[in-house]
Image (tube, rainbow, N blue to C red; front, side, top):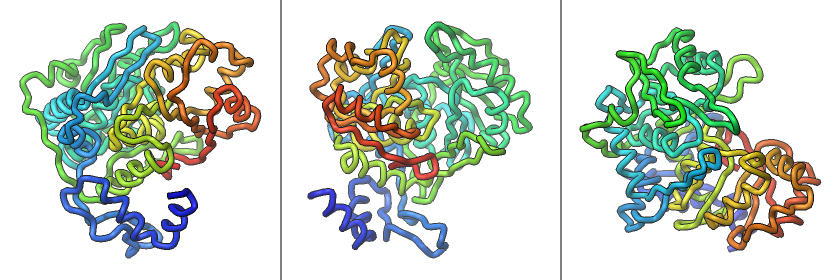
Length: 396
């Protein structure tokens, strides 16, 4: 079916089109219709359905016999390590973490702030919240204490999940002192915090408030997926707050599931078993939609990359990741390409790598200037798609 046909159908029969796309999701109770307009102009999607996001992103792929497929590849040129996590491993890790959170009182509708670097545990924390029907709010790892405090006061989390540190080229970012400062400054205090200790820096835990990631999971009953209604909030993500108070964008569950699942094939041309890489961060909307949820809902392998386009170790690192992990569709920001182009204008590093699996490059995040787009088209020899979207829409 051509783009024109798909587009025409979505315009001529939006209700039929989106109900058809909804069939790709595992519902506990399917929706009666796609769009609920009774509260216009505040429209709601698949509102009367019952569903669980974590089930659709993790468990159903194990049930379908793909438990041994890689769900996540963590590639960290900063720690010189690469590891893979299968869908079965991911299910077990997420169910364990969710069980531990539940044992500490986290329930459906509770908010949980996540303050973590680009490690698989960040995705596990997001999915564990989704498993329980808790509402996560990921704050970009390393954000200043004041910014974190503002978000704590706004969403009033029952718990905060953080890592001991983040890693930048040549330096360790101390997360725990930032977290401690934020909790001290905030009027709202979380009941507890969970700290994932990284070997690069082990943080001092506050007695009675902080629990260690592994220790607090010991001996707990793994949690099953909790069904929620279609309009239940999946997450809160704050806009950068350039004007006054940062605004929390609330993403409802069912529309998020259907749209992201459709987009993986419809926009990015990947399906179950394909490798998709969005070189962003879980702290931004791209990370929510296309590092965590979109690829996993569609049964792809997603890449969690802890590095930079240049300097970890050089301007060829993106091409190495694409070659080594057989990336089919690649999504990054124009800024990243500009940095690579500045260091390697003639694309010399590209000669060292075989990018035969790469079919398309997607750009979003800020303006893609024609010179950068043309450079990428010429050097990579694949279509370069500049598509525009924002935190408020959640997808392109």
